[in-house]
Length: 203
Image (cartoon, rainbow, N blue to C red; front, side, top):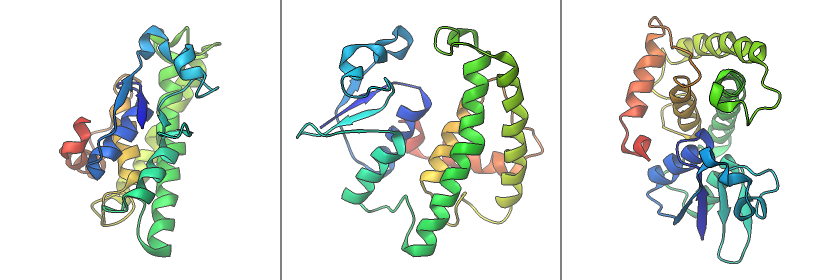
């Protein structure tokens, strides 16, 4: 088994944080995305979309997409449960995971990809207006999330889950996307400090 890893890019990091929470060690194959190594044969032969991370099992099975990789490991190592427990718990985690991915991480990623000068060769065409349009979308969602976090410690309930991992990655990615969390979003900032303090956040 080996995991083709893209360093500090959001989705590869999301899987590493998940594995760290599970205390699972998987051999990493570093891929320099800055040098466009994810476009080369080693990755493209395993993932036609040329994206990371990519998990290759010992029998040659390939799994791509960060949440799919995390679900695979959740099935093998159910504790701690990072996708929820029971029908309601799992549904609630799935609900918030999708909200964090589509309403926050995706908006931040679009802002970064369409505004940051380093992404000109990646995002063709780069549309700065679209990047700017996504900044208020991310902040609008965070305002809603701030109200939700006034009543609980973690995004999907009382326990740390994949939704918190996605949220952590998204907010950390706001810095290169040049989006600042408003200081009056006190509950989001409290939550972010707590999840950033977990050892897994350094993965």
